[in-house]
Length: 169
Ligand code: AR6
Image (tube, rainbow, N blue to C red; front, side, top):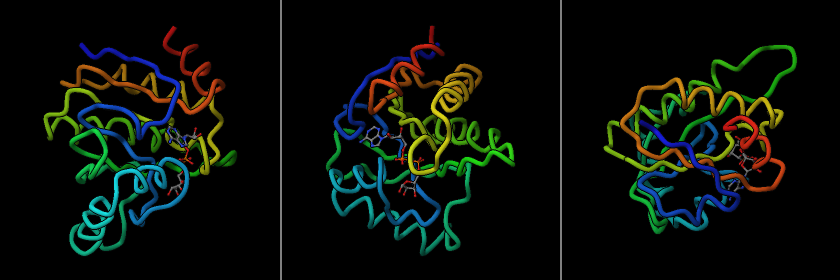
């Protein structure tokens, strides 16, 4: 049974087995959550990401997939990087966003992670409307069989927290 918990705050301050990063397909850093994770986690994360680019993910990590690295100096064992879709009003990319949560949980299960912190993937730079991002996140976690005991959504501001709280009920 997976428990969903909500926290308002900074995902890089969480103590969990795995922290999920809202990355981009380059895996080589960016702004938002990605920038914060690399800043606080230190260079070991980027070194692992570069190794992934030099091996399995020469063309980058495709949207909707997930891959783990060290968590460096973060208070976690792993960072699970996933690439959300960019929001589009013309094109329904919900399945790709749901895939991020499903694939991150699959990687967490492979690692044996029992507590996993997620940001609201795609809801920042990638422009996904927060209410819908929250709906997809919560529905997908509820529908995904996993040995993860706690999924902790870490929401940066009150609006994001409210959107997730409405979904969790
Ligand atoms: N802790 C928790 N949530 C945060 C934090 C934090 N430290 N910082 C931002 N958020 P974003 P995306 C919230 O932009 O939309 C990067 O440049 C933020 O308010 O981090 O998936 C990557 O390299 C928002 O609600 O991710 C990609 O290029 C949510 O986290 C691109 O941004 C996600 O915002 C990915 O865009």
